[in-house]
Length: 340
Image (tube, rainbow, N blue to C red; front, side, top):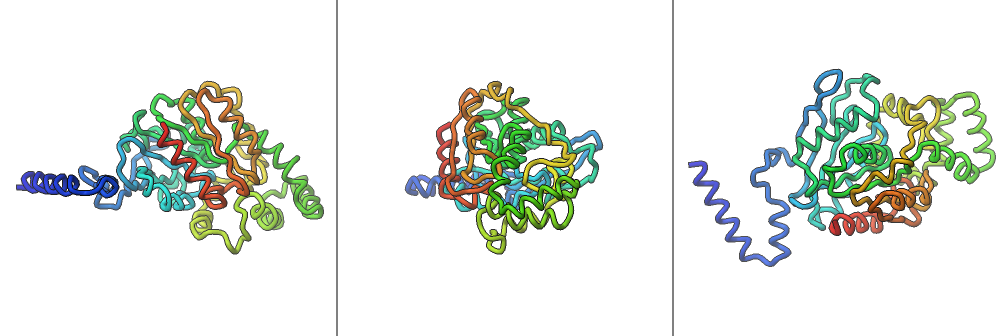
């Protein structure tokens, strides 16, 4: 009886679609949940991940249905959440792109084992591969979009598993942490008010990276200029919600206490994949922004050094270019993925 009902429903849907204009047919197809095990949860599901410390669950959420384009979003931090990517809801559905929100282990809706043994690049790469397998993504449709720390993770994934990718997008990230630090200290630092820079340097010399005063100076003077170019009181709600849930111990362990370079004993401070960029053969889009925390010219270098690269520049934007320049950022991404 159930199979008869499903066949009848499918026949009715097909009949209805055949009578619809093309645009409406595409919309029906985009929201078609047939055969989707996550349909009853609105696309959300927990995926078990095997780690050296056991099995934990990470959270994902699908929107849309497109067998040819499936974008997996890698948030930054490390330790932020998918929520600041919610601006994608204003652009991807209209373009017919299937996309997946994803909280990495230790972040947001995912499990948080609170063990530094799991906080390393290799284990996160393994996690992304397990998520890919669970979601059924492959080289015919899988586009990986990583922002900031997510860009590091996306590069590392491509260097190990690019045979599974259709396209790679590296957003607002350079290929070298030492280069990131040098740009912050030598180029962006001197743009701060002189008295603020003197105090920041003095606090850094003391190693007071996590002091309330140091973080306050960075947040007040550096973030509105280079992270998201609005006064702090006007920052978008999804950004504030995401950052309020930041796993600070994870962020501190790998990135350090601020976006003003990777400082202190953060484990990413010596990360550098510049020499390995030519190994990336998959079509790659690098995205840079005019006032980013990192050198936009170095982000263009990523596009120049990979074997099949292109570059998207976001004028008047900072590190969160998806908010500062959404009408450049998202159309550029949509054009890239539709051209694959």
